[in-house]
Length: 118
Ligand SMILES: [Mg+2]
Image 1 (tube, helix red, strand yellow):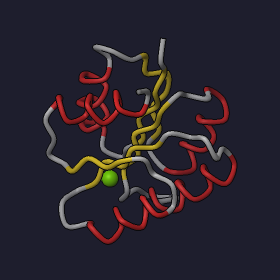
Image 2 (cartoon, protein in one colour):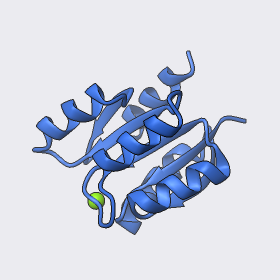
Image 3 (cartoon, helix red, strand yellow):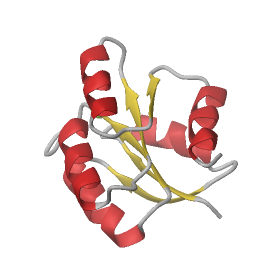
Image 4 (cartoon, protein in one colour):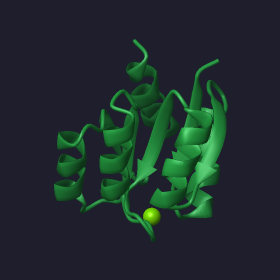
């Protein structure tokens, strides 16, 4: 089964993403900041990652940079708040595969993740 990791500092957002993704994918880890995301990625090697941008410790952009440096094939989809267009473009330039804007519909999330594996 395809495995995923959810990275977001907001518990309510992690729960919502898990509820959506659980229907099709196996969520093997949840991280609450960029540091934790790097540790848990190395431990679980998930097939995909959903990555929030605004987080304490290491933010999403910094975490993405380090993740891609260590795991060039990591499949990362950014999940960002509205009004973060510049950061979203920066993330895409740094190797993120797609982005989702909060608030999102379940279909949008599943579409973005499904597409990673086509
Ligand atoms: Mg956040």
